[in-house]
Image (cartoon, rainbow, N blue to C red):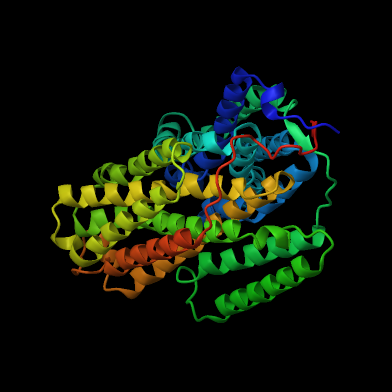
Length: 484
């Protein structure tokens, strides 16, 4: 069949509509990771089950992470429109279940369903943009995706608080219905003309089950370890041992299956493997820092909850600035790797400064260092994503993008657990956070040092990643495609 390209069937207005629709779809998934936090006390008061309240937040992350590669492969088989529609529909159905939940157990189950729908929206958005925009132009569109995460981080807790205080906590779920409908309507009609590859694929069910089981078991251990159970308790050790066995079984499956969930040709691609490690380590360090910095501001700097949130803004806004810089330069310079390499170098230097002198810096100086760190990290994400997609065969685009997002999310979960363990092992105490005791100097040094180590690993793998010239077309010439 003769080749066709997205530009031949999609107008510029269609592309803009798709990108906006995908941004709304991504916003659905990202918002539900942050909007729930301020509503948890009211939820527990209405439904009871205070001992299980942490699962309302964590079960979404757990199921969403586990299914990311499945959406990537499914979209390679059935097309992006079908996969996106499935994700949005599942997410909205889960939201309705959450809003109507009569008990804590029901709510947790509905949140798990929400995660099954929301897990694929991020990687599907990145993959769909790769289908319609050439790699040379793709970097600037990654800025929209990074901005979505920033907006959800800023609006999520605020909206959750407003809805809970002035309306009802169920509104944090009902709002997903109009947003889901908007995302569907804005992208569905144009996506019908999105090119799809003619190669036939099969979904590796056994591989998918092994991957989901290995991921869920690992994240259960990371969630409960150091919180509900000691890291050396039998339960946590059994969870980690079981996860290791399941991961080994998954490795066996991808080496022996006729068409594995994650093909060896994808995992063996130097750009995919090294770019994924760089993005995972950098993003993991960034997420861990963003979660524990408010604790530092409140305990070590004596800030209020509101003040600590405002003090976090340089870290959040800087990532968008860095992504914007990298996105604009991707299509204009030949050696595009230099941007994230320089960014990671200065980000590492910033983390080292905090490791050595955090307690001696004025607040203004501390905020300036945070801005340097976040701008440096922001340059990595669009570069890694575009480089991976540029080096991947079009019929494996969804699989490669899903793989990157899966390991990036998993890396963030692992890093947050490591940061928590480091903080618990320091001289920091819970009483210090609530003003009952002073925080010993250097209590957060391990957190800042771990951030620097994460950035260093990301820098090494970014240097190691091959730099292929970016294509000026959406797909290699002559690729057989069909509309659908």
